[in-house]
Image 1 (cartoon, rainbow, N blue to C red):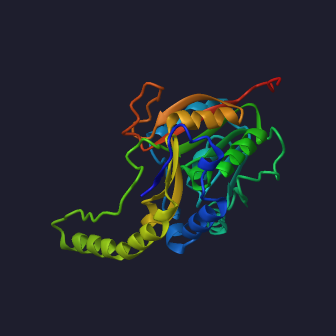
Image 2: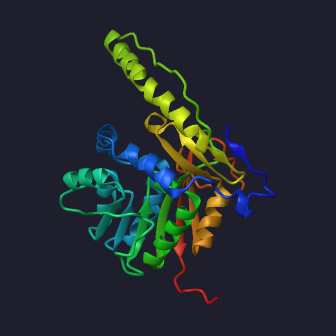
Length: 292
């Protein structure tokens, strides 16, 4: 069971996450560097969902031919998408195995092995657009998340744009549980293949679920939870719409647009978000530094 923290105590130092960056890094990088995971990412092409497509379309004309930084590039799914906007492109990922796969897939692109919490290799105000797709920012704990947002803000040009996606604390993906589900088929070959795949995943799924559930930590506005992807092999953060807006504002951004992952429709404060798995935020750095 996740630990519940009341709204009155959620900002108290004692209520801060007990899961540290080393915990999440060891678990998540360990899963993402597996050959099977890398092969899965190598097969990915195109948009993850309508919200991602709408977010990129929203910024494309403004940032065309200008410098782009692609964080969490994985095996290069977004490289093709973003290089269509600008050839002035750099992709980074903190998992070496993903970097190697991306370089092999896109030998013409600049792909670096780099962690988003330390973008010191890049100058202040270097990029017109930074993208952190596929909820990659959810792979780190709360303190590191704030550090990543500050680094992104630093390397963005004044008036620059940031696209970031994040899992919804109030959505259907929160609190996933292992379950047995076999899609029936009258085709015996398909049914046999599906049965074999299900049986193969049961052992790692339940092993990981037992191993990592002790790290689950639920708060009113955010949570750290073992998620179902990769046979429950990752532990990630979920945030509410309001909380993620707050985090962006604290880092110096103004949220310009939020889109749902289901239909790519704008999300407002009045939207019922319970059917939304994750959000796509388009945020902007101020054109001129604000005077304290």
